[in-house]
Image (cartoon, rainbow, N blue to C red):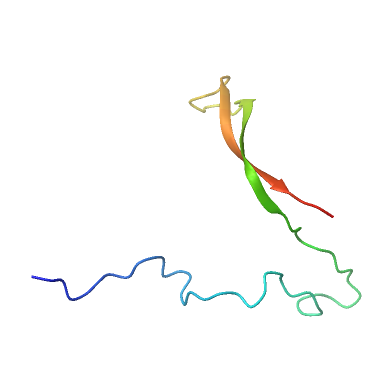
Length: 80
């Protein structure tokens, strides 16, 4: 027999799902003090690829303490 209902797919934390009006955050007088300097909080870039970064784990009590560890890293292309 066919199933009549389907459980919700995806996270309910980001409901309703819809596209943003613009990709940049609002910059203006909202949420800042009088005379406070406006500065960008982020920069625009594109994901160029992935690579690996190797380091020696220095955290005490870690299972890999003192060993060489590889971790994934994202390469971001930022142009002026």
